[in-house]
Length: 434
Ligand SMILES: Cc1cc2nc3c(=O)[nH]c(=O)nc-3n(C[C@H](O)[C@H](O)[C@H](O)COP(=O)(O)OP(=O)(O)OC[C@H]3O[C@@H](n4cnc5c(N)ncnc54)[C@H](O)[C@@H]3O)c2cc1C
Image 1 (tube, rainbow, N blue to C red):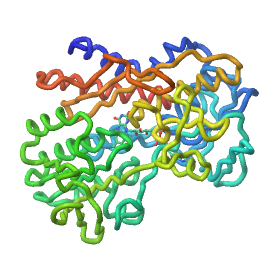
Image 2 (cartoon, rainbow, N blue to C red; image 1 turned 30 degrees about the horizontal axis):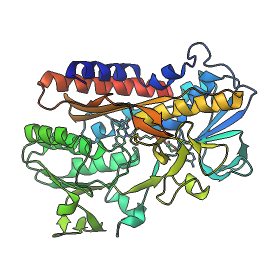
Image 3 (cartoon, rainbow, N blue to C red; image 1 turned 60 degrees about the horizontal axis):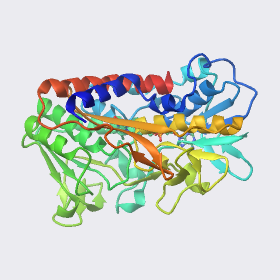
Image 4 (cartoon, protein in one colour; image 1 turned 45 degrees about the vertical axis):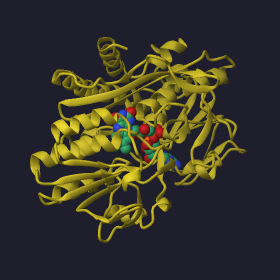
């Protein structure tokens, strides 16, 4: 794709959110939203993040007779997208929080603030933390990720107050931001990203960039070291070119096979022990542990040996249990990355599949979409985008769709991509929670 058509493509994606999947399925979007919860089939959705909230909303839009109950443990959702901007001091926490008010009042979703503690696939019901059970005709699970604490010696949930992961936005974001603010000029920050697969492949490198932007302005003698479990990472050429240009001598990236991979952590002394080479002590450590599907799916036997949920990639129906669909980060979705945009796109396909199935009709072949923007500085954005389709039951990229931002372009181009990134955030959060 040449640069002009690519620019136009990502601009359209940024502006329009994720309508591609629906457009190609020919479903009617207008006019059927809102209204009172119906008296038709019951769908319970677990998790009110990008996947779950979108699915609940679009189930009601596609068929208002469906009774949709969304169970979410928190009253408000804090987005990981743009949480790196909070860490870099560019925005505050309020700017990345969303309520479920519109789902309740405009879309007729019954939103319960509660936690699903067990799924009974044989009995078609879920148990709730606050007591009681919900029966379903179909269950959609979008619990996001959990952290694999046991994979790294010395690290567990209790050490995350000293060594925050900040890979679920909320209190952890505030902890890491406070540590950065408290650090003296001349301090050392370490970010330790995990091996694949994990939530938001470019996320750690966007984080490094925006923290470096903060340090450059407020603590210019400081250093940022990335000790990576991997030997390469998403949009690497673009990130490294930008780091050289914007943060020369501030960011150092160490690849896994050169001593980036960490075996052991001593939280008390903030020391990391790499597989190869000397221990590293830092003033602030952001260790991002390896990940697996959110806890609730493990007890219900919805996961494979790697800790992720196998699904029919056309409908997101679990291949392990009947009447249950899994979407978002927890699902194995072919070539799609674990991103909020991907979860939103999958949620619409899943909603359409459920509506078709319950209505006894056949859903046309879906398409799916994703763009991941990354900010490297307030006026410097890059992106990777793709449209996906089904091939032999697997989600694959459509040849020639999207691609990554070009190297060596004028500042104006990067500035525009930063603008599209903010536009994308407005549009995806409106599409999910609005
Ligand atoms: C730093 C960072 C930056 C990112 N930036 C981007 C970006 O720019 N663009 C992008 O597209 N993606 C981005 N992502 C990725 C994105 O946040 C995730 O891919 C997305 O949130 C996945 O959606 P989900 O529905 O699977 O899970 P989530 O959005 O995490 O939602 C899961 C929800 O389920 C709830 N839940 C879990 N278990 C239960 C239970 N048993 N009962 C009740 N509720 C439960 C949780 O409270 C949570 O609200 C970023 C991630 C990080 C960490």
